[in-house]
Image: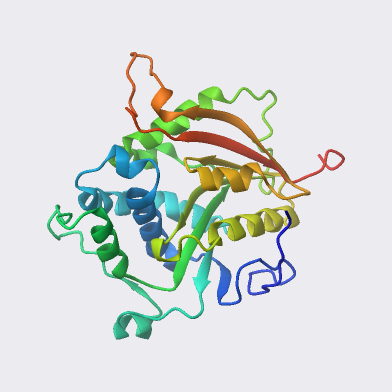
Length: 288
């Protein structure tokens, strides 16, 4: 089903989105990096179908380690010029000092490492209240011609060791030959790596609307394809079922609880989630 796109509050008004009128899509700028990083780690550590089940204890301490560890991943993608966020134009600030600066993050890494006596939901809300800014959802991307430096990803992988396993297994399962995700120049292939929506805005279809807008925007800028790795059924569904004229296909997948490594171990234990690598073809056969 094709969505109705009438919201022209986007970086390209000729490419409107299907978001409600209160929301605006903006290109993320370097000063947005802390906000984007906070949304990314908070959403994933407390509300993903994988991470809070793999790491159920001391999530606050892990969040405070992961936030600075993920700075390179977030910054590299924002610098690409192809990372976008959804902003709530009717956002009500919780603190007057936040309103004065247009938003602020109040996380304190020096706080006690265990803050979860009230339960994970209560701790999630406590941390969310400290995210006092109008950015509500992110779609981080980078040009595949300018790949991530995995030597700079070490700190994040140390915080989230299964992050590296997921990408390794999906890469092993990708048997494409030739591989269309390998670019010959900039502006051909976009890699998506960082999808997250604040929990207080979940369930409104924001992620899907932003993803579909980005597909059209990338195609309009000449990109021939987008690649994304997912560990969420909702994200997988949007990209696998890309709206026409685009075509999404799963090129590699595995179920975490069924994965056995080279040593015969099951690193994900009983945590069950299908992870997938998805390729979205933005060009018709005639154009490729």
